[in-house]
Length: 462
Ligand SMILES: [Zn+2]
Image (spheres, rainbow, N blue to C red):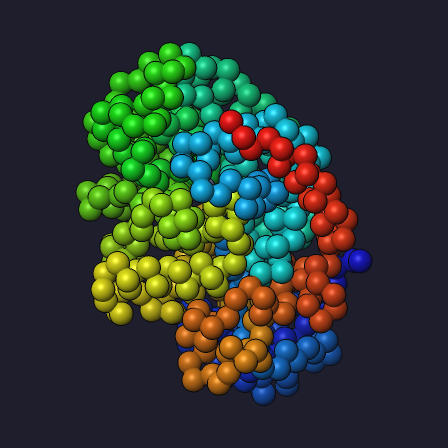
């Protein structure tokens, strides 16, 4: 199947509700798409008159909103959905790394990532910030017609590995850059993985590279109690692993965010993934550095890490996006479920129903993510001149009936299963009515994932 390319043509999408996100909801609204950009947003009655010979699609009882920005994913790990349940964090991450490195070929990782991208388009996601070890996410995102930033991961806990890790990182970035077929849609970045897999020296070198080449950077930071103990005094499972491997480690006796500030890493204005353990002082550090945060409430809860102080982050004016993290720790790429979880957890932990509104959660899932990854001038809201990245969520399910408040309906009633249409850069990449994803072969990918799952399922012991 070939995607419906509206480029050069005009398309008028009409729906019962339009949520531009920056601006109030519009009942009986419409969005006029011209080529790959949004030409107008407003009342359907007035846009019909303006639309001339544009193709018209009336989505009926649905809400049109900006496509979701999933600000943290690991597409290559999609095949590990449900594989590593009930493991503690250290063994979860160790097993996951071993399977990825030892049991999966490049083609396996690529098809795993493609299935993740297929799930994303069918969930109304139009932009992904993906941290990736193998680099396959670039091709998968391009193939699915998505927008995104792929942060090439780099590892190296031993200071002696620093030179080698940097050389390997630079080589990978050059190869990915040369292989990109849609550099306008898919940007490259770097991701020094986490404080327990990256030495101080390597962090410093990657930050220098990020600044010198203007490559966006993402870091898993302040995620777990195990990480906090490792930085505080070298205790806990990560300290044990360093001792077993004979890697020297001098704990800085500070928080992760303070350590990253000391190393000069915050100067690269990184996207800080998780920040569950961030203290009030850390939030000041993040604000002063003009860094961003991606909140992954479901992954943090499922792995037993806790709840990030997202209310305090928002109160301080930090740029905060929402991310699903990998499906190995979620197990869904469903931004409505993520938004709902963010609201529920913020309210539950603060014992305050005012802690986060449905509207705030929708903002985090769209423009907040776009701001956090630096793409807000292009995507994240429905505004004339921006890229035509949008989705339609059907409101005709029993679970959403009746509608009194469209934002509450989206966040508290709807799920990714209600997504009817996804458009990226003016191209329809998912159309439920027309059979689903338009650019990826779902039947082939389902068969491939079943095959890869069989191979890796024997390797989870030990
Ligand atoms: Zn992650």
